[in-house]
Length: 135
Image (cartoon, rainbow, N blue to C red; front, side, top):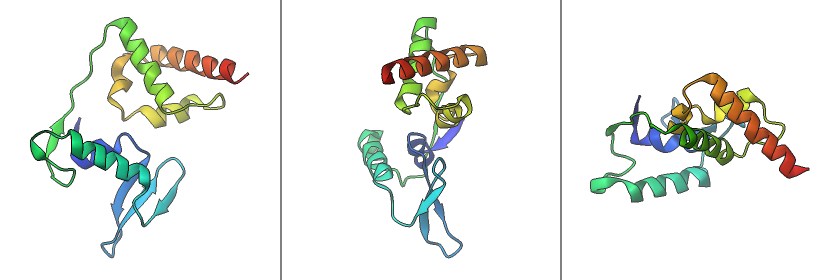
């Protein structure tokens, strides 16, 4: 899958940048379904972090295309990576499978586990840990 630098930085946030018909930029949160004219702090932080980590002085405004290959894990590391991904989006005990998948599907770690069954099992384990931790 190919991502521009802007799309790649968006993969770590629920906010997306769009341009109105009048040419004005605005931001839309795909989870909360809200929009803002001003750049959300979460997006500012991601852009700043991305600018710092780019190689060769490239900035987020550069329209380079970067090939992100699949991540390959050993079986125990794969399950751990997928669980860490689920935990990083702060799934709650009331979070459904569909909600969790929408939150993580664009992350490279999503492919750590190859089968849907393995992903669902890891989701159930993380959900159980969350609900036990809240009790």
